[in-house]
Amino acid sequence: MISVTREHVIAAAHRLYDYNGRCERLHGHNYRIALTLDAPGLDALGMVADFSVIKKVLFAALDEEWDHRTLLYVKDPLCARLAAILDDGSIRPVPFNPTAENMAAWLGETFFPAVLRHAGMDAGVRPAAVRVHETDGSCALWSRD
Image (cartoon, rainbow, N blue to C red):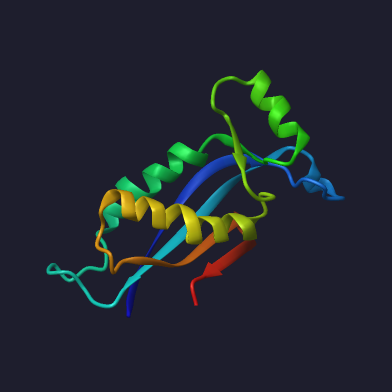
């Protein structure tokens, strides 16, 4: 197995639903997301995946979904209320409490695999790890193994 990693930064707001602390308030981060893809071997050019394709396909899809959006748990009462007020697509209901851990797991298990399939990228290329940096000193890591 061989892997490549590319990082990308998005800006997004969130709050943690049913949390007793400062993160229960709506706030934002510049999330740095590192995606590691692996494959059993290299393509004819000697790559797992072209870094520019990772940017143009996978991270462009992520930008469309989460960049400059507000991520709110679908069970959070604020989610429906804000979505009704802000009719501009800026509220993104997510099926989990938007912790860095849940974000990393969803990106690795659901989002990036779906984008890879939709783009028709080599079936042997798979997400191996996703690291979500909420701050410079704090991150969560999802890995397939």
